Image (cartoon, rainbow, N blue to C red):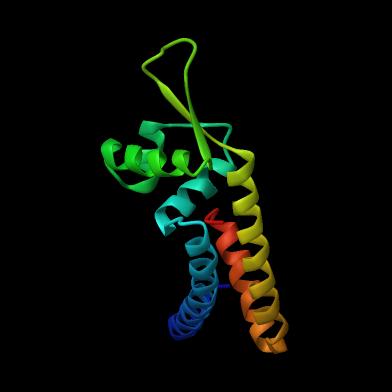
Length: 148
């Protein structure tokens, strides 16, 4: 069954409001915590990418971040100085640089994910039944389209 366009638009607008509200809440908390460690949002986003991969090459990083390789190198330089990442040369091709997250970087990402999850749990706990149903419906629809 296909939902009426007006209903879809209304649901999409409500979901957009939810995303903006939760993003604002999460970003404020991220900002405070990341400022303590002198980590920018792009650097943190790179750490989150690295936390789910064994390593990324500089080209991979540039592509994922939407930056030039030079800009990606700058991000990695700063994170390396802070000991959140390390660089290694590939054994088969020394020109290929592999960037890996360190335990310190993994701990930062884990801590921030936990804080975001706590914030979201608080938001979700305050939702009424209709809001929860709408969110579940949206999650299933997004998952069904392989966007999650």
